[in-house]
Length: 291
Ligand code: SF4
Image 1 (cartoon, rainbow, N blue to C red):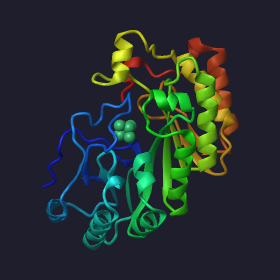
Image 2 (image 1 turned 60 degrees about the vertical axis):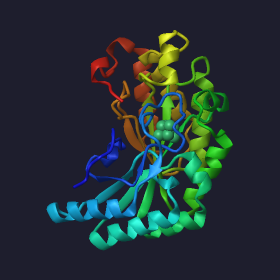
Image 3 (image 1 turned 180 degrees about the vertical axis):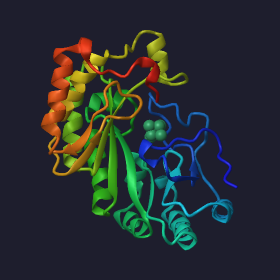
Image 4 (image 1 turned 60 degrees about the horizontal axis):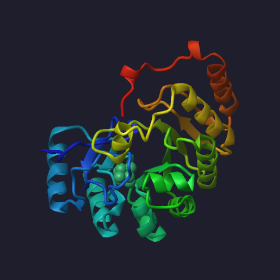
């Protein structure tokens, strides 16, 4: 059977996917806001263990439509290992429609376009990339480990390999630089032209440097109104030719979704309404928000 090691995370859109822990933890594991894999040492799992898990699952359940390769950074595993795993998935479930994984910028930096192309041909066709911000001082403060220019350069390797990108921007991470963060983040996303863009609201989680800053009152989470203004600024500066936008992750105070550019004006108008009349804004109550 599949026995998961430690806490397992997946993007909201992978709710119906089979989660396979191809790797454990995150090779970077330093982002100041992220507590997901702090207790784990990054390692690639043995193909034999995964073969057994896949066999066991296949003997008990119907073939999955989608597989998500966990944990936080599966693309950091060697291309040969990933290719063998993808072949195994294909042989077991010929009807499998998609395999996806998180891709840290560090992993995108080391994987070549040729490797990503081969893996995409074997089924690994979508990466989730946490851009978080396009504002360099904010990227430094978050210890993301790359600059905005590098983020674009690495993401474009995935584009060149024909891999679909789903990128995330964090709202509320740039106290004092909200506008710059929103505008610079939009610039980075515009340069990448990903298929999916989503925004999440940063939430201090115990065990992280951000939590320490919060406890010591060096970080004050922005109000829902300030976050709505930041989201509006971000949306206004997006210039995308065909992307799906969502701010419906549970961490958000406001749930918006649409296709860009088609729905851009309507989403900005909805935010204008919120900013003009905050008392009646459809904010998600604090107790319903979650990471
Ligand atoms: S790269 Fe992703 S998983 Fe790794 S520490 Fe940063 S946010 Fe967390």
